[in-house]
Amino acid sequence: MSEPTTASQAEYVVCVDNADYPVSLELHKIYRTLPDDDAAAAGDLRIVDESGEDYLFSAAAFVPISVPERVRSSLRRTAS
Image (tube, rainbow, N blue to C red):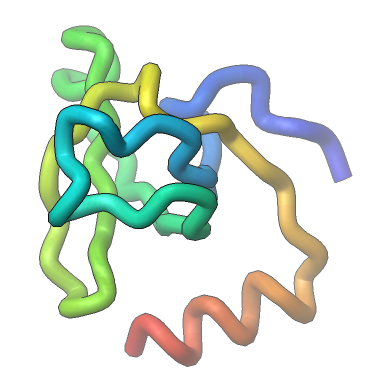
């Protein structure tokens, strides 16, 4: 499995900086992203929270990760 090269290419990211959004983002939590070329061009990511709603946050607050298929399936079921 190849690693995503940028957070905007990743399906999943980990929050590594929640200083600007301590109520909205949990440090070290895995978040699902949605493709959004306009957001990426502005340096942002479209992040899906636990309610299923998506919001824009600075891509600098996240690190892209690759997850095994079993984990990916579990995360998708949880998000449904």
